[in-house]
Length: 172
Image (cartoon, rainbow, N blue to C red):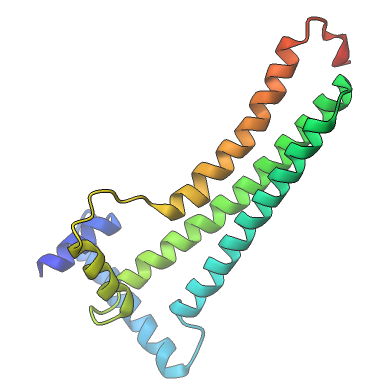
């Protein structure tokens, strides 16, 4: 019973009744999916993880390409235009990555609500028993931190270029 209570706390439920009701519904849905051989939560997790990693890889490739383009530009007007467009593109890509990150976290939380003999819960118990002092949320690093730092770096350099230009006529 204590393992269930800690799981409810991990999932962010304030009331145990609410948690148990959600767990019961999730288990019913999963059982129905398995009986009908439908698209399961595991299938959805696989799809979302692949989409998540693909979007992150495109972000890294785009970031690298735009960094190389900015490094080659010598004209200040063209540099400002390129920086602005690059920052907008990377920000939109960051938002798309963040959106799929949220969906992945929701699916993972739902999988942790399944029975104790499911693979996710068995692995979680083993990882928790390792007495790991440092726990780095890799999904958060890939889904939030790296994309937003990447897009903020372009916004920062764009702002720096505007402020550092002694004459503002290059903007016009």
